[in-house]
Image 1 (cartoon, rainbow, N blue to C red):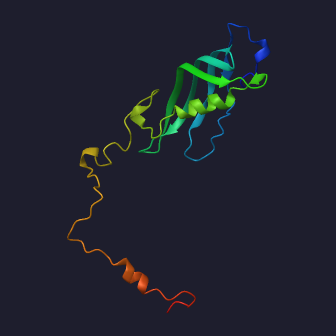
Image 2: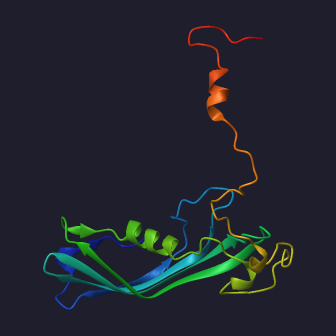
Image 3: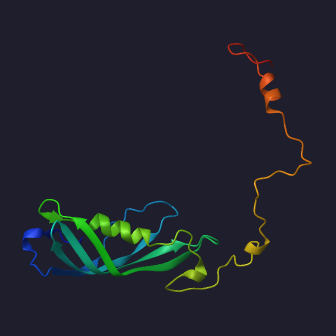
Length: 169
């Protein structure tokens, strides 16, 4: 089952409720490190027209298996967009929310998830303590120490053979 195609001609002035579950994976994530969709995706939204716009409000949730950015173990993650809101331009006679919902859900996933940050089953990371604490990192200033001799890059360029000749061997 996929999201229903919304017919504008069938929407009453107060809007119409659409709810259901989607079990098929329509996220299209196939990379080795990509999130893995764990069905179902649930939606409960109200769609209404407002002049030239289509207003969608409600709640959407989906579960995934993400990869911890430290230990690479899989961890569960639940995206809950509640309240969910989007405003689409009314174009043509129908609206397909699939692309908009897909984008909103994927953007809600964390960029660098950690085992202890899972919003479903947090647990200590296997690699906890394997990395230096942030307090021990020394930020780069962009300045080189004054006692380091600077290489003469022009001298290296002067040693190149002239254009059109073969390099010395």
